[in-house]
Image (cartoon, rainbow, N blue to C red; front, top):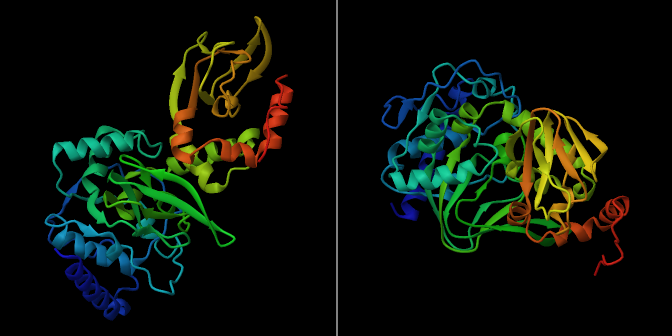
Length: 383
């Protein structure tokens, strides 16, 4: 389907929805478009999950998306600008107004958009690298993968605009996308995303506007996931875990001046690992590249065999590995079964670009940490 045809069809759907809006004020905008069943299956997701209070939606836009999904999704990729059209004035929709949407219903019907095995594998690999998805069981993961739909953007297109409402999450199949914020009328590039990177999740996870702008640097092929599928399949404990991780990151001295967008991306990149009693998590003197947060258990720091510090739930260690190729100052030993989440330097750089940007912004905090560890900080300069 040509872009102009898709645009015309989208406008027709918008007019139809607006003309009938008075009759649908009390209806669930996501359950009105399921009569034919051609594009759906029952995924059997448990109905025992709690309400997710943070989620919200725009009903008109979702109705239009549902219609387009049914008639065109299997035959043609969707023009992302058609789906992400925004009127100049948008009315805020509270979670209470769409409470039925925010609950996980007993008989949730998941969308299915056809993909070959190669496409499914690529999406799965991308999701496995994301904190939001790597906890899913096999059924949940397959349901999410099936719900992603095909989308194309042209070089120079804005996929997401900072400050907009958002209803879609994206996985990059091909192409490059620049993520930037505007501060004091100046463009500040945060990072460049490539194949298998995930973006746009903040607006779906929280009741919030887009935190940054995403612009296509090249022609891009994307996979997109709608809010409905995300809401029903991703459990509410994800939001709770992410909030906990972000709160801990705020306390990390060398990272505490990160803005909310940067902090959320770091939280997404955290991976989980378990250490048994007696395991060595970090060896003194080795060159490490990993930062750890202790989620459960007890660990001790040892210097020349002597215990110098004890770590419990919520504590962190190894943060200097994100900023400096410095030998580990102490050994960290698990004194009980320890559940940790960790972030590697390469993952940090991939998400947020050169680490020096944060170091320069936070240089005084960094110098203080080095001083406490007895490391010379005189070599650090700010240009």
